[in-house]
Amino acid sequence: MSAAEETPGTAGRPARSRAAADRLAPPMDLAALIAAEDTRIVVCCGSGGVGKTTTSAALALAAAEAGRRVVVLTIDPARRLAQSLGLVELDNEPRRVDVPGAAGELHAMMLDMKRTFDDIVVAHSTPERAEQILANPFYQTLSSSFAGTQEYMAMEKLGQLRAGGQWDLIVVDTPPSRSALDFLDAPNRMSRFLDGTMIRLLTAPSRAGFRFASAGFLVFTRIISKVLGGQLLRDISAFVTALDTMFGGFRERATATYELLRRPGTWFVVVATPEPDALREASYFVDRLSAEGMPLAGLVLNRTHPPASTALSATRAEAAAEAIGDDGDPAGALAAGALRVHAERMTLAAREQRLADRFTSAHPEVALRTVPAAAGDVHDLDGLQVMAEALTGPDGDTPTGVPRTRVLPARRA
Ligand SMILES: Nc1ncnc2c1ncn2[C@@H]1O[C@H](COP(=O)(O)OP(=O)(O)O)[C@@H](O)[C@H]1O
Ligand SMILES: [Mg+2]
Image (cartoon, rainbow, N blue to C red; front, side, top):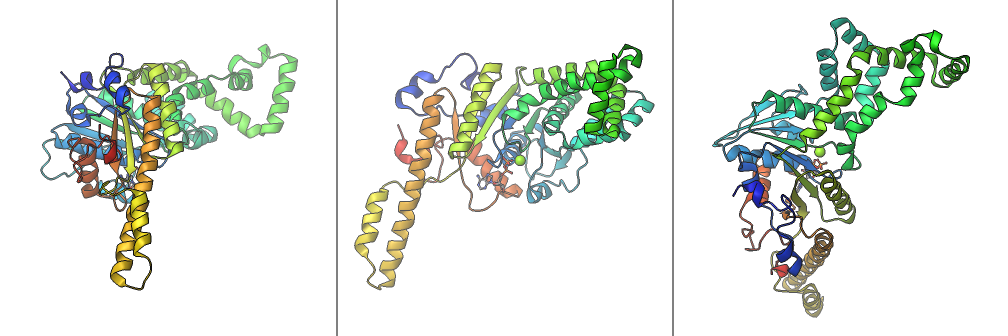
């Protein structure tokens, strides 16, 4: 059985019965998923700051070590992580990352959304037209700052990488949007915008010729051009006219790229931290994926804080610290301090467990993998290696011998 078949969420809801019974999420076998030959694209989604970029890089590293030729498309990686991946400049092309001892190859790239947009324009119009479009101020604004451009261009780049056919696996990071859903909505928004009624109206005179425009419409454009500024209107108009050749193409492209995400071989990994906002966002995303028929590998719950031991409860640790009291004995003070730290850790873990449980009772079929918070940032290959191990290592292999699908050892079935 391939990893794809084993991962819950493929056909119906296989893992539900057992998981629902004891309210534990089914485990997620990411090691098998990334090593499977028929897994071609893995997309890491989630709200901002939860660890999408880091998870993408760690999964790509693990896949390269498993022998695959992998490219990770990162978007706005933290500077130190980019440096350690050799991504010193934004060149919009994959670069090989040296991973000593890896059976496969790791390549990494950083998305340059403006360059990606420019490339599409150049590829789909005549040289003169392309020059016109690229020089157009409205195009320059659209290509570098329109909300959704980054999301859309990430998909474009994914399409290009896939079409090149040279990668066993493409791991895609998603933009630091406010909402994870922006990634899925971008192609539609982009084509709606370019094809929008407003733009059609505004540019109608130059598209159809003034003779078709009614007197009322000319008054309307005059008012609009007063409000927007005549130059901007002329820019938009010139841009859309120049884009006319690609116009129909844009919507088709958006649809095709979107379809790529539904093809067999594509898997989504939703990343969240054990916090209400991140998990709420993950919840929306999981619902949306299932509504769109897009395959979900599972949820990575990143930066959890499992205690070293659960033998001592928070209450008892607090009580013991209290009992030692503050009699000036340094050894006693040290012990009381350690007990309080343990109590805090237990309280935090219990809170994280509650949040994870709430997610699982709402989505019992969603497989889960937890990744403990590292002591510092994850910004080099060693750090990624640790994270890769947490994501893909055996599920029962935490330092405390506890399955990683559980936040708290006490939740062991
Ligand atoms: N498991 C972890 N332990 C410690 N730090 C982490 C972990 N995962 C991510 N980080 C750190 O959190 C920050 C945000 O991670 P990043 O992957 O850039 O998030 P996103 O791409 O979702 O915005 C980075 O500084 C990263 O090093
Ligand atoms: Mg990021």
